[in-house]
Amino acid sequence: MPKLFEPLSLARGRAMSNRFMLAPLTNSQSHADGTISDDEFDWLTYQAEGGFGLVMTCAAHVQRVGQGFPGQLGVFSDALLPGLTRLARGIRAQGALSSVQLHHAGIRAPAKLIGGAPRGPPDDAQTGAMALSEVEIEQLIDDFVAAAVRCEKAGFDGVEIHGAHGYILCVGPLDENSCCQLS
Image (cartoon, rainbow, N blue to C red):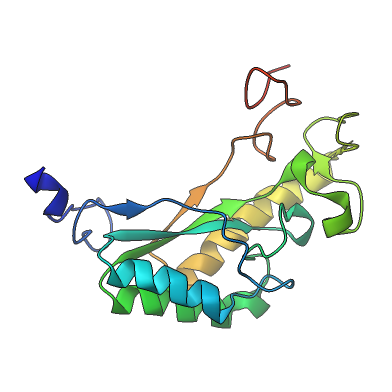
């Protein structure tokens, strides 16, 4: 147990002050346009103040059409940089490392929320999702990279890519036995 309270050196960047990490939790506190709210900022910085060595955001969508739930944090545009920068600085000011979970809901993006049919690797009759074209796949890759660069520019210490539960990086349609099924 004593090791939990010891610093953890990483291959790159600052060491974690301890080995406690806040997992990404869906909190639905951001504004409809993806900007962070004061409530979400306060909640995440409070976790850093409370002693976590690493604080990770909720899943943050890398494309507007990749939003998975209302109130989701966005990282899809430079217009979001002021709030992201404020958050990274706020977490750092409390002594914790910060990380953003990059996300695209894929076939699980609610059509009403994104204003059209969700997109995913395959067509999916169950969700009404349409398969991505090769051009859309290339754009998606570019958007994941741009979001990671944007997070680094904002001052975050790292990113994690969310690829489970039928989201964009999970290949194949959902079934009742697993997060996804390989075709």
